[in-house]
Image (cartoon, rainbow, N blue to C red; front, side, top):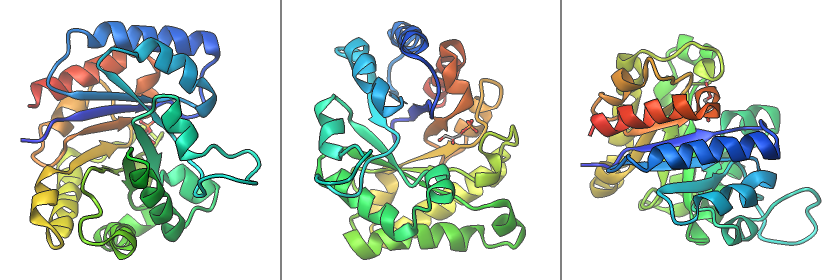
Length: 253
Ligand code: 13P
């Protein structure tokens, strides 16, 4: 049985003050939760404030982004070692906002995935199709390709110790959630695709759903066999909502 993971992606939101309130609320509420993994991914500049509060708690911290290079003349970037030094265990790679707005290609994302793993952190590897791709019936092909680029770089065991987040681009921040059946079908496909390389890793890898998951729809989604939690954007910005989603993960076990 896989342990569910609920991870909040706070994106570029909050001030030092509101982020402190948010993380204090999450840590406090998470005290009564068990049997699930919980993580929050603040903006890089808020990571130090957040890890100060999460230290010794059951809430892990992740970065939303990391530089593809390890160090050197890369103005404005943050290295994965810097992120690790500040207490992060996870790093999101390949979020669709990074792919579409900042032009990160499948190859760049795969290289970042490798850098995160090499540092001993857990990549949360995001994949998913656009609306046009779904309408053209190529969702599986798109997801398979995004995964295969990582296999090509890292070999058949690439997803050992990694997390995958299926985030249909059309569902992110739109209020349009994939139905539990739609999401389950893609999650099952992803697991099967990984099983073709390594059945044991496929059975163990956590596959999260992301895209307008909220306190109302979380349970139905997480009740699906191959949905092992969520990567939550908007609804993770209120600790009460985030904690309801965590509770849904707990009862889905
Ligand atoms: P929303 O939950 O706001 O749709 O965002 C999902 C997401 O992008 C998480 O990474």
